[in-house]
Length: 206
Image (cartoon, rainbow, N blue to C red; front, side, top):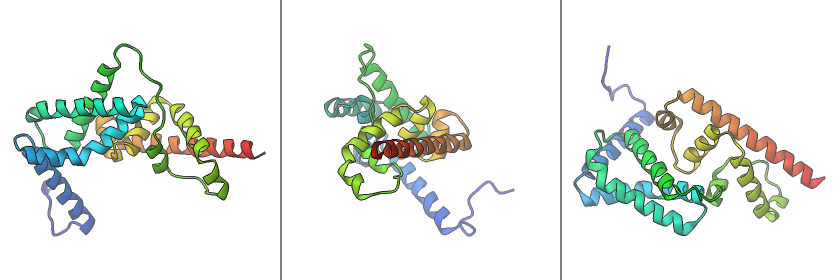
């Protein structure tokens, strides 16, 4: 039985994906002692982290401060990261992000969560109509309400998929659940969003 990659039998897609993993892994390992490598790592992950934080706190100024604190923590502790595999780093970064948010709002005065505009734009859309452009602002508000009404697990999966740009298998590792469970919850969440959103549109047009 083989326990190693045989590049002769890998598809082009698999070979590309594996090469990307190794590329990012090398950056993560170098970032432990090389400021330039850390800058590359920062550039790759800072945007999804900021989107996630902004989604949670609904305040651009707070989001910038919290994101800065997150990366200060990453810089101070990356040397102790045992594995440079991207999936391990993403799980570690996600843990730091959540802990930093919890500490920031530990006084219990956390702002209501809303759906950031960029997340709405990335969600699968329903059938577009000319009227949709006119009511774009109200539709975004509807999405905010709908996403926040999802069960906790489905809501978090939506966040990680559309804000942190994580794949199902990476989300599964972070949440310690089976990838099939992630996929099932994700599909149920999207089905709910589409169905309820369409119902609201029908009611508003009657």
